[in-house]
View 1 (cartoon, rainbow, N blue to C red):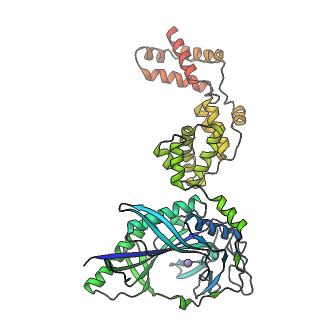
View 2 (tube, rainbow, N blue to C red; view 1 turned 180 degrees about the vertical axis):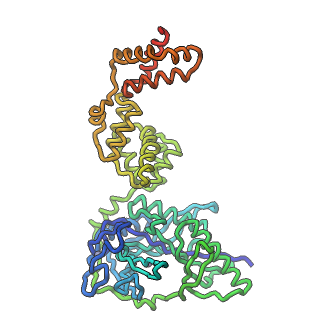
View 3 (cartoon, rainbow, N blue to C red; view 1 turned 45 degrees about the vertical axis):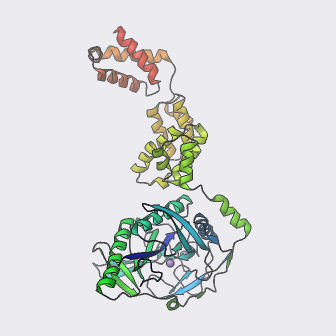
Length: 478
Ligand code: ZN
Ligand code: MN
């Protein structure tokens, strides 16, 4: 008998808003514990939630990127359960009229192309975080994350391998980052995925017993969890090793096993009902069209355009579309200087180096693209030397916008004064007869040493070709 696995995913994505979903507390990651809290997000009685419009903007954006239908009237519901990280003892979420329904995500794997149907996307608030202190045998609760806005993206059970799941999650991540819906960072928990999995006889139209797995923190962990859980199900069916029950399981990546957490709740257990405190959100045509107009080009279309219209190679184009920030800076700088390949080099090498030094990610590149374009033009026009231009880039990185002004202030303007160059060359050559003799004896390196000394003396403000010619001439004479 052959078996097949049927997988549906629930993906939670934290939205890139400044403030929380129903109050004005900061939604930023990484603050001191319980720094971002107020009576509303701590669930104090009598507080009235007010929907953050930006959350609806981003919910709509997510839906449009994933080919969903947008519900023009969308409402919030209470999902009731008690847990210490949920101070109000209910989560405000969407059950009856979620913001997006019926979408589609196209993926490609070694088995070919496939469409994964999206059942719905709903907006909701995140819960707080329990912090366990084993040393003091205490558990503490941090409410900073409470009411941070999320969308939950629920797929139909259309996936049938770990490879497909990974392709789907990577596609989601790429689209949502491109549309600036979320930074989608697994390691910070801004993207999390629950796996609903069942196994059935191949070709059967009946679904087997379904389990839900939580607590996978990387794509690798998700792959391991799916492989383990599939084997466990098949073993249970074939060898009757255990009875499968519908339940929620916790993945332990260190042990490489899943463990039962709780028998699966049904919707009824949560006593969902419309939240009477939150007004329905009505999305009119103006609002809908405004969001539609902000949608970015899909990354693969951008990549193709960079290659076909701007002449970039596959590697440069692929590397740029890894990051929306890279693309934005690239396009601004290109519009300024028209030198696509140069701009790609400056971003992928020099800017990437600076980001690296500051331990920032590609998405955090926030320089003025026009300033970068102007700088590249200065170098191309031989007004500023390449080495000195790097110092100017460092200033653009800190927010500077006028590279020419910096070049003037720092004395980085290339001089066309051949008299000055000749004078420097004569001095250096006269002071270093050994290098001159070495070069004449056939040592290329000796020439580079002399060249470097002259360049340093001229502070890099010199056309290398001119310097080379004048230096050769001077050595001839010596
Ligand atoms: Zn608050
Ligand atoms: Mn949820």
